[in-house]
Length: 262
Image (tube, rainbow, N blue to C red):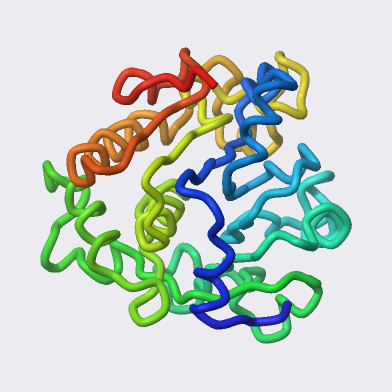
């Protein structure tokens, strides 16, 4: 990966709207005219949205694709091939987990020297600030009642380059941190369903191997659902100048923010 500067990252922004692209099954419900509208906005993919083969402005790399051959279709080789064939023009934002919480210090994360060399993209590597590791002495999680408010404060406080990208429990936290620091005035969530564990590239009655190994089922509410919903609600209150919209009217986020009618 060709590492670029802060200025080059900021120059990639070309819209006031950032589309956060999840992997929920509702991605299949987006119509051709809606995709044409969405393509006019900046976008950021994460986890396995790249299976859609729809290029995004940015792509966030964290702990996805850490698996070996035991997880067919979700290996490091799979993500490398997809990034270099369909996402070579997407600017990568990679989280270096080497100084994150012990749970994330895995030998396969992207902070290992040379690990990003396989990608042909321009991009940046940002150190990760983990809430549990860095702030637990002052803010005893998970008992702190205003945890989501604290997360939003850190998004506003921490500079991506000088301080690092902020993580707490789910990938939506660093994605919102990116949106905040790049000063997007509108955020549109697509494929962020949260009411089940269905994924757009799988049949409706199947879920991922990792999900099954965790003892979760297709119809079960996503394990980060309530947390993400509360965080987005806190974000709405903390940053009232930012418009938040969700494509899927059934999404748990629709209980807190408006539904996009594009």
